[in-house]
Image (tube, rainbow, N blue to C red; front, side, top):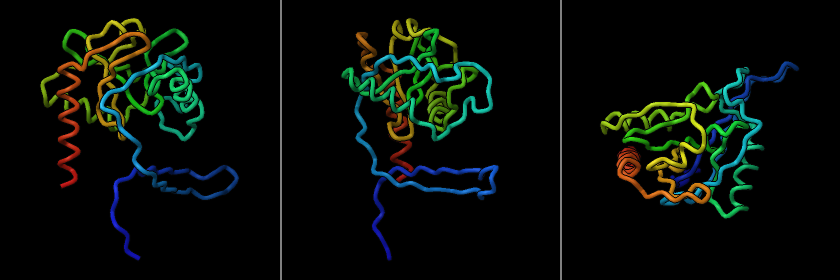
Length: 196
């Protein structure tokens, strides 16, 4: 039976099987595209479950153990925000529950260093490639949340959200600055071009 093509989110889950003999499995989940906001407001949420630089086999891996991350999002929403920025026990900026975060200081995009165990997502990689194409400098760092709160701009990127500005983190307000705007426009143009 033929069906009409619609926009959606596809999640591919691949398992290696189990030590008890079950075979590897691949599961494809189809979901509607959630609403994407023009800009986001984030709460700061401590993430004691995050490796935050500790070395272990799943550091930097994308797993389906979303329970703590979803709890962080729910905490942020209960406090009146759209989502969360996760920080380590020591207050180091990590990532969002389902996104990468960055900020702009002195004209450069800064993102959390991968040594912190944050996900090196394809979206993050492509956003930085777009920054290169636009001539926007960028680097990574292990950064306390107070440094992000003093930044000129804050942005979030994920497969669903694309690149979007963050206009509020806790009580700190941010303008939609020129770097976030240029990167967002480049991202949206790239995605629109993929659909043609």
